[in-house]
Length: 79
Length: 138
Image (cartoon, rainbow over all chains, first blue to last red):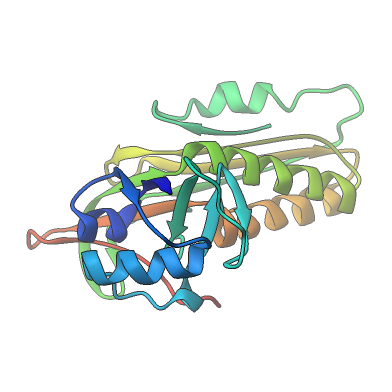
C-alpha cells in the first residue's frame, strides 16, 4: 500500500523532508514506524510519540488503508 | 475559538473577542518569548504546527473548558513561524461573570494547549546553534 507521511520538528530534520509518499507492506502505524525509523534513523521510541491518521489522533494498531495520511508526532513544545 | 496564526497576535483585537454584557471578569494570559531557557541564552524561537490537527485539538480544549467552567467567551491563538524576544507566542483569554471561573478556565486552557496541541518550538541560541524541544511528559 501507499501512505503519505508528514514529518514535524526533529522528525522532519531526521527524515530530511516534510512529507513523502512511501510504498509499504505495513498495515498499522506500529509496523510502519519501525520501517521508517530504520530508514531515516529516528531515535524516538514509540512510547514517546503519538500517531495521527487522516488528521485525527488514533492508536498504534489502527488498520491503515491505501493512501492514508500518517503522522508520527514527537513530544510537543508549544506555549 | 482556537486558531494557529502565521501573523503577529493583535492583543487588542483578541480582547475584543471577549466582550459581552454579562461579563464581570476577563482573564488573559500572554506567553512571550524569553531570553533564556535551561541556562542557555536564547535570541529567538521558531514554531511549527501540524495545523489541521492543532486547530482541531485546540477547539476540543476550548469545548472542555466551556463544559468545566462557568465562562462566557474563550479566545486562544498560538503563533507559528519565526519569533523575536518579547513576541507573543500564545494568547489565551476568558470572560466570565465572576473571576474564579475566568482564572480557572484560563489556566486550564494554557496548560492543556502546552501539553496536547501538536506545536513545536525550535530555540535559537545566542552562540549560534538551534534545536527542537521535545520535553518529557510532566
